[in-house]
Length: 172
Image (cartoon, rainbow, N blue to C red; front, side):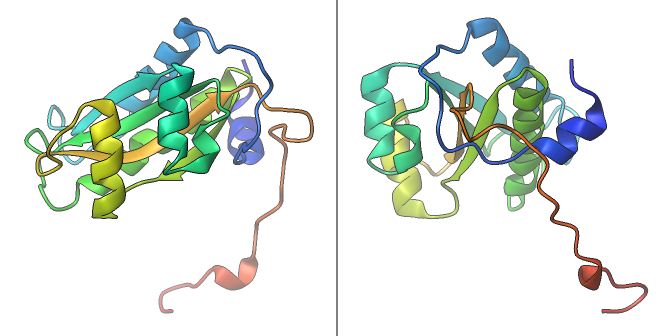
């Protein structure tokens, strides 16, 4: 297991993966990490997850989000609006879950990439149809997280993004 500070500081977007399968136990750990995210209200978290490992399905998703095609696995985060406490800010709960999942991937020696889907209705509808959602009114694809072992040159490593000029105290 990796130290927490190292996980935070080395997580990066992995866009290329080694040709190596991700085991189901690790995928489940990543999903569990997503479910541990803070939500607007306990018991009203909107998240649901669709695990994709089938190459044909990954390729179909890749027609919309090209980075998905060559990933060994992908997890589509879906917001069930009916379950959300605040019906208009479900994206915040989903974003917290997505980041937890990306951090757990690093913890497991894997890499991940957040592929944005929401709020673009057309993209949400197309991805919804691929994963079996006919109407995105109450069940909305939020993002696709690709998961895999980073390809050579794409390892999780520290990239200093600190910029003191972006910090403001008391007023902007």
